[in-house]
Image (tube, rainbow, N blue to C red):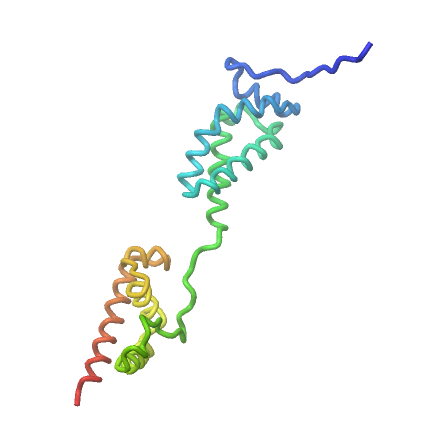
Length: 194
């Protein structure tokens, strides 16, 4: 007679509490993990999406949170809070950690950078002179002033967008822009004098 394989894992019932599911997870019951995931994944995903902003990253971290819950199910204590709060705290903490450790997008240093060309200067010989003058004007600006002018003019970013890209206050961006434009006007005005 063939030996019949017995599956000790029980299916989760809707009436079963979250803490009972976590207890079953601590004993290695994968169905309990699946039931807990089904109950809480949507809410946790929304939380992660709010914190991280990216769908793929939120999905990835959601998976990690449930794996961590699986590994640490034996440490859960109902006296310290609900399973829902336990999962939300784990998700929130991991999302904040990930956000803090993520490489920040920074623009490359513009120190010594050439002014980007707009079109073909050989089509208009006067433009060669204009580009040289513009390069000279840019040399009197600080790297920070050049950066805001280049981002605003050549990339078409607003002051708010520049502030976000540089991770600086909007007021700082506006004052750098104002200072750069004053230097630009002053240098171009000197060129016009006989």
